[in-house]
Length: 263
Image (cartoon, rainbow, N blue to C red; front, side, top):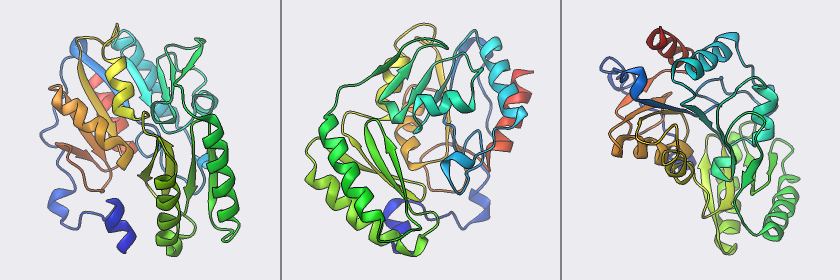
């Protein structure tokens, strides 16, 4: 269990703290900027990233939110924008992909990407690919701005994965290690969901609105913090430790809560 403690994924054992959503009251529609993570927040986590199922209820609530909030709903994900568009081809709002390395303002718009060392990303990816050969249960995910080592099917080797990825990140100038749910990602230091959201919230139609952010992962914690610092609402999905003021047990509960709020 040591690597769970090191990465912040020890579950909350006290049942009284697992559901603190009773005080969750969302602001009026005309005041809100709705910002949502994808995996583990709107859809259930799957054994492999390509095995998720997007429910009709998920698609419907995103469409209703886009209409009700005059376009002020955005998805903020670790997935690439191409991947998000594959699973949500009809979503018209902004997409922030690869933890902020990619930005799409609206459906059909050009994808903007931050600058980073592409040669270093290619080098790191080759090293992680070579390492993953040691255990066939490891899954390597290639991203435009980094590389992810998933160990969901090899939990017993979590500490091994952490030690390798941490050493690799420390040796790569300008890059850092990001712990995630059953995964470790090496990405540029200039990439983060909170950094991307600062930009989004400074532009219309999001500027001046109250952020409501929901996310399940360690990668969402800076964004949850940002929402609260701006006087908004932070909703942690699932049982992992968090600084968010509110919590819901899973994607189904979030979708139901948003559906009721949208009316």
